[in-house]
Image 1 (cartoon, rainbow, N blue to C red):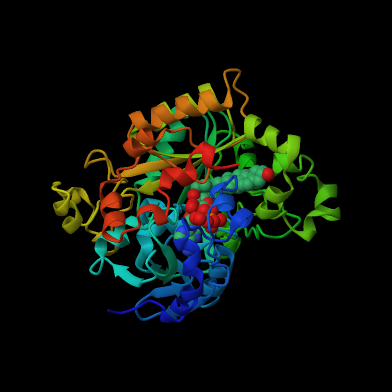
Image 2: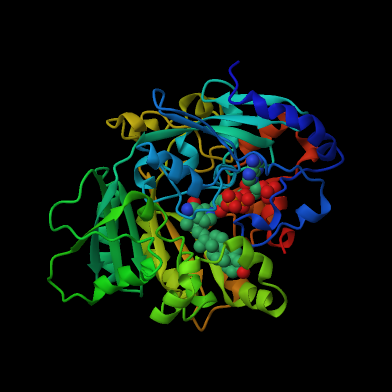
Length: 486
Ligand SMILES: NC(=O)C1=CN([C@@H]2O[C@H](COP(=O)(O)OP(=O)(O)OC[C@H]3O[C@@H](n4cnc5c(N)ncnc54)[C@H](OP(=O)(O)O)[C@@H]3O)[C@@H](O)[C@H]2O)C=CC1
Ligand SMILES: C=C(/C=C/[C@@H](C)[C@H]1CC[C@H]2C3=CC=C4C[C@@H](O)CC[C@]4(C)[C@H]3CC[C@]12C)C(C)C
């Protein structure tokens, strides 16, 4: 059986005894993007995968990049774009890692075409709790391949992944479409998301009724007279404030168009950590801050995490939310209303994502009728996709429901109703009702039973039994529930 990267496997001989003493975890600790450190990192044995962060190979014939799990998006975008290539889905914060995006979830503004980050992977190399190094793809160990995404390291350690690459063009032609009613915000966003001719689709909602839909296409050149905006320059305003300015244009003026360097586009939210920076450095968008301090760079999330302690930490945990909910697009209006009522946090991030059906062999094994008939097979890249996970949990609730939307709320809620735990429970109950999903980097109040209701564990349980993961590795809920993080 082919292996993705055998050179990693030698390192496990010395790691594994730690895992066998009870449980195992990766060694990234507070460097990780998850909001809080897992307390499991203190109690359970550890396996350090820090050293695995290389780009092993860029195969332009097979259109695959082979990477180790610690490689981050900042590095991948730099190396690939330099060579004229990019990932189908390249999440926007520089420090997000391949391992975290596959074992958790990864999304970007091209997800309306390609699905989640994990859908663009074609093979994984995994070290199982018994020390075996296993290769998996859609034909070999397909069940393992399907269950690694969303499994949060509870089946084994990912040591390498093959990810699809596509040709990159140097510029993104970006059109900003301001919308001034909630109905318009939903309609314009949905129409753009259903159009595969758009390379990138995103919306920032600034109030309940106003938002800017951004539609991007990769292009080779900037036409004469085209407006170029090099977003990464230190003196540029934060991206979300720049986007908000398009709402000030008089109604009826043509939509603004800008040309953004591709890599600047991808990392447009890195400098302002979406918009979290406004609560961390409230004067950070002033001209004097930019000239005196901002040129040094943005504070790293990992550093912020390590330095947020004591009362400040309690404040962040009770007065601030960071939640991403994946909901069927047909429920977008209802979701926006609920978010407004319970949280009233703006800007809100809207990112469309294509929901992909599990492969027929796995559905048949589960005794289910394939929903593939409704997939858009006219596009060659959509002909086959693996199950998302756990256990195909991200299968659309209804075959016709293929488009979902990530609604991201990051900031300090202004709703008078807001109470951290109660509001989170209300929002989670809504997401379960509409058969949506929750991102697990943030807090979840779900009980184990509710969690199993949101994420279908059938294949996941089978795979853990098959590889005798047993008590060597915890279940996902044991790692992500509120009590397991501090
Ligand atoms: N646009 C996007 O998609 C964005 C996504 N995010 C979120 O951030 C997360 C990614 O952040 P990042 O800091 O890279 O990842 P994390 O270190 O936060 O890891 C996320 C999860 O994946 C597990 N994991 C990571 N690497 C491996 C591996 N090699 N083998 C097995 N399990 C692994 C971690 O286990 P353990 O806890 O044991 O280390 C953890 O449970 C995503 O899961 C996503 O939800 C955040 C911002 C933007
Ligand atoms: C998942 C998505 C986006 C998420 C980001 C907005 C959040 C991911 C990690 C979050 C943070 C981690 C740690 C922090 C330290 C604290 O002291 C302050 C807050 C924060 C910086 C926090 C801020 C929000 C995140 C960056 C989408 C794109 C799918």
